[in-house]
Image (cartoon, rainbow, N blue to C red; front, top):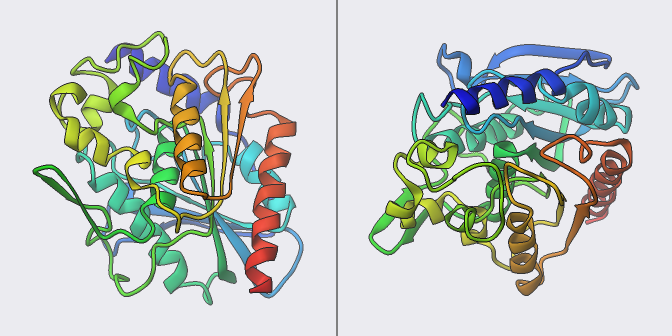
Length: 305
């Protein structure tokens, strides 16, 4: 566990920077309670407009943090603000607070909050994109592939993906486009599909802690926490980034998701970044600009519909 804690602290320290914009709201509780892990921030671009399309960004932490909502605002967040997107950064419960699907229920609740409170915060929810890195990439991809799913059954296991968090259950948790940065997508095969410095099958690995038991001993729940399980032709467009030197989440995870999306004829692109590790070398200007262009293109498509 100490290794994972050190990794998480390093990840956050490398990706937490200052941010710019015209207006922001901090520590808004999206669940109607007083818990820090149910807070989010909203940032608006410097350019003045009546409303802004939205991108929700989910931080990475190996599901070990419940309060890292500022991560990557100086890089990914700033680029989105500069391109005219409102940026929403939610906290969510960690694996120490509650097991899957509870953290995913939080992200769904944050999306519903955005749709329910769009007028108050100058948000144009005709387009709601989502992005995330590492465990946040997993959750962003889950929001995309499960956007039309309330309950999901696999074998003898059933999970409530939508959840009952917050007061806005009548609103949709659907998203319109996804950018997944090196997230786990089929956690059952992380050790068998590519080499990393981690033993994901270990009972104390981040994935095992997230689902509440060793992943190979809880295969159904492991797959229910994996975005690939939910892929179907109704999924929104995807853009996926992964470094070919990632020593935490093997790049085969993104390859498998991309293959599943392509087989389902979901508009999708995958970039295997030469020399990219788990964040470093992947969160770079060219790739961030590709993300911005992808969200911009899809927001235009939504406006034209």
